[in-house]
Image (cartoon, rainbow, N blue to C red; front, side, top):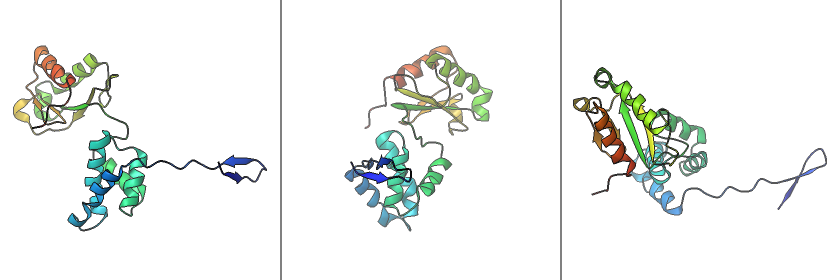
Length: 183
């Protein structure tokens, strides 16, 4: 371990280098996007999506590495990431569910649905269950008013109308089983 001199006469260990978080394959997928966009900065959003799909979050180290790949500062990557509500820095559950609070859903009990769902799971909106299976968040509008009050899983499953205890339990049973199979 290399030592760095310090002005007070004590030596301190140099900080250990941080291992790359993004695999070579993920870096290649990000750089493969470059010809499809007018600038490197325009690749920020799709790069964040690729990282989030891989890790179920975008940790700080991943933001730093995206910035390096795209010749940006980590603050520029963070600005893009923080603008959108679907990127998290901490891991989210295997399934992420949004419960709608739009006017249509609110009029049909959307706020109560969010409260009941979180109470049943022992979490607050934006949190993940202790087993890491489920993250519940609210959405201002899911665009599925015909299902009000409604919920949407991040794998595309729509739930609603969730008007009673049995429909809520059916949704929770479905999402606790994990993401829907692809295909």
